[in-house]
Each structure stands twice: as structure tokens, then as C-alpha cells.
Length: 432
Image 1 (cartoon, rainbow, N blue to C red):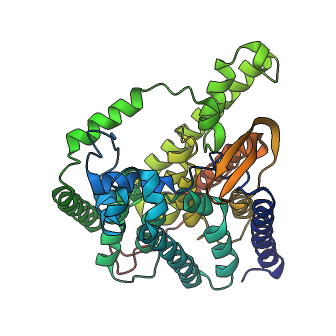
Image 2 (tube, rainbow, N blue to C red):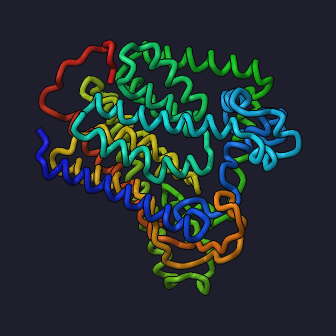
Image 3 (tube, helix red, strand yellow):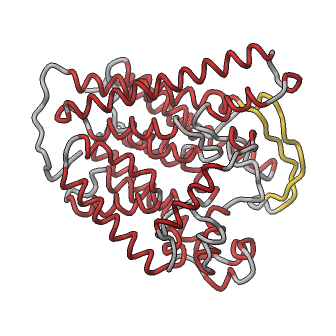
């Protein structure tokens, strides 16, 4: 049984998330726009929703817009938006299309209930504070402000990796849908392959392919070759948006590029120190990746001793710390969701959970102002003077993720090398 001080600590962190949300709302009321860490282009709110909705209703997503994701996103948006609103452009669509906004808010509200129910099934004592941090923390709210399809994708992911469904086939369908929204989530299914749960691997693959083929036929484009060409086009493009890449990054790679790229006269620290820092961060990232890969290899050696969610959390951590994600820090929601299944016990888990709660705080501190200019705020409905810059969160957030990744490596290694493995069914009714 968890000691009351530990439960009190979780409530304290949840209260800090709510306090941060209250401060953010207060600053929005005063300034007319959401402050950092929310997106710095204050006129661009919800355009991750209405931009794709334009192509969902007019076609051309793959050969004109060069979309990277399977056609499920466009079929979903076609069904949940008002096509007539996009006759001219996506900006007109944002002003006109009330249905897409209503559906987004309804799914977001449903996710709050889903998160709480899921965590309550796992542990009723910690369900509420963790649900508060998960549902109202900055990764989820950032995705909501952007209108990103991560919101409905998360619904599918939570139904697949949570225990709301006790039967296997609804979970298979839910996971297959999440992979079709965001293909990189297929990496998080790796633990099923490691544990040799062949029915799960084959079922998720079969449903995933079936959903892909059905949505391909409905939308009319989005073939594997089109997606591969667009992915290749995107991957070879050299990004020079140093600030945009760093803004809500989950990895230190944007900072490393920035330290290498800027001439000495534009750096805040001496050139030698900048190069040493870049080298140190590179070595830390490579070492963490190597440790994770070794852990996964050992898990494949002793699959019966691994925990599916814990191993999936490690895969999710590696995915978001190994690559540059730019301002797409909302991808943390999958890692946060999985980490919050861990109990607040021992010495390592409280450190990991504390880092996770900190990642959820919807606050940031600007250290070096870089943007001070007028802009039209969509949410504020007026022209405002915006202030954004290099922040404490941009420097600490990738480090906290590495702390979480290191803790997950250690916990998974403990599972693998524990003296005696607890027997578990190879493919029982509740696989997690």
C-alpha cells in the first residue's frame, strides 16, 4: 500500500498543473494570446485541423500538399468537417467550419473521461491526480490548441493500451487505427513482437492493412509509393528554422545544431564551450540510445519477464528523444500515458514520475527574448504584442525525457534479470 506522503506528492504535482493552467488563462486574459510554451504563431491556432481538412475536402493531399501520413486522417476529416467551408482556402474554412471544432472538443472531453477511467482501473488511489496531469498538461493542451489529429489518435491508443476493453479484438482495432493516424506508433507495438504474442502482432497488422486499404479506396490517393516519395522529400530537406525546431523539441538535436551553426559572435556562450556542450549532449544521446537498444535485445532474449507497457514506454521515449521533433512536443502524450501506469514505489519510479509531472506543467520561463512583435491572435480576436524566446523549458525538457528514458531502461533491465519470473499467459484475455 502506498504511503500517504507519496499520494500527497502526486496531488501536489496535480495541483501545480492546475495552478499553471490558471496562470496561463490569466495571462491569456491579460495579453490576448497563449504564452510560451504554447505555439508562438498566435494567428495559426487550429490550423493542424483546418489545413488538412482543406485537402480532405478538395483532394490533392499527396501530390500537391505532399502529405506524410496514411489516408485515414483525410477520411476522418472528410466525415467530421463541412466541405463547403473550404471552397477558397483553409483560413476561410477555420472561420466557417464549426463542425470540425465541435468534434475536436467532443473527442478531447471524451479523452478526459477515458483517461480517468483507464487509470482508475489500474489504481483508484492515483487515478485522479494522474488524469489531471495527463488530460490538462501542456502536451495535450498544446495538441488541442493546434487542432492536431493526435487528439482522436490518442483515443485509439488509450483504448488499445489501456484496460477499458477486456476483449482482445476491440484493442486490436483501436491500435490499428492509431497506427493509421500516426504510423510511428507502430514502434510502440514492438513489445508484442518481443514477447512473441503472435496473435497480437498478426491481428494488429491485419486490421491495420485493412483500414489502410479501405481508407485508400475511399480517399482515392495515398498509395505506399506516394507516401514513401513524400517521406523521402521531407527527410532530405535541410531545416534552417533553428528557433522553430527548438521551440517545443523533445530531443537535444535542435540545440546541438544551433550550437554548431551560429557564428561565435551570435552565441551567448564562448565558442569553445558551445562546441564542448554540443559534443557532451551528442554523447549523452548516443549513450542513451545504445542503452535502450541493448535493453530491447535483452528483452527479446527473456520475453516472458518483460512488462508490455513498461517496454512500450521505453520505445516511446527513444522515439521522441532520438529524433528532432521541432514544435511537435505534443507527441509526449503517448509516453506520459504509459509512464503514469507505474506505481509510486521504490526510489527510481518517484524520480521518473516527478519528471513526468514536470513535463505536464503548462508553464515556461523565457530566458532570452527573441520575438517581440505585433500579431493577430486568433483566440484573442485582436492584434496583440507577442513575446517569445529561448526558454528554460526548451533546455530542460529533453533532459527530463532522458531521465525518464534512463529510468525505464533500468526498470526493464530489472524485469529481465529478476530472480524468478511471474508466470503469465502467452496470450490471455487482458494482455497488458
